[in-house]
Image 1: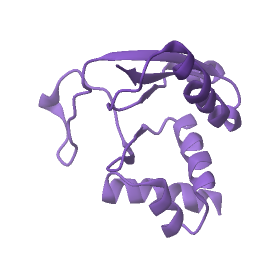
Image 2: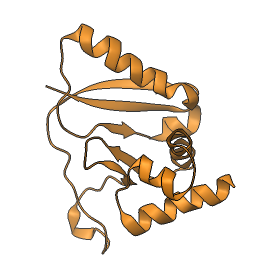
Image 3: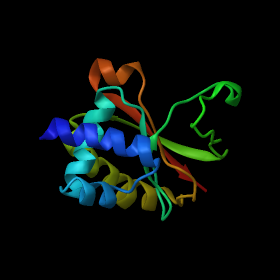
Length: 142
């Protein structure tokens, strides 16, 4: 069943572009929590999925490019707005990632005096992720 759901997520994102976890959960008849776990599995497998917060956000495929000139037809180029980011490095079991995010929002942000900025939050999965599960979380700040 999990394989069918993972393939379903890939096919839905490919066909529809940006999708919210609630919509994916409804279509695939599962919980949002399961969708988040599945997204982590897909990312671990090297599928380039990103999430964009906010009312028009959701999950979609993404990849960094040096130039928009060679973007494949059907793909959309987006520029990440400039600004300051607080960078957090996560290394651990992905089942604990929610707790890590919670600590960012409930401890670090309030204690730092920074406020979240209304720009996309980014996660950078590079060679470290495949080696030891480590990746960086970029939180936009004012």
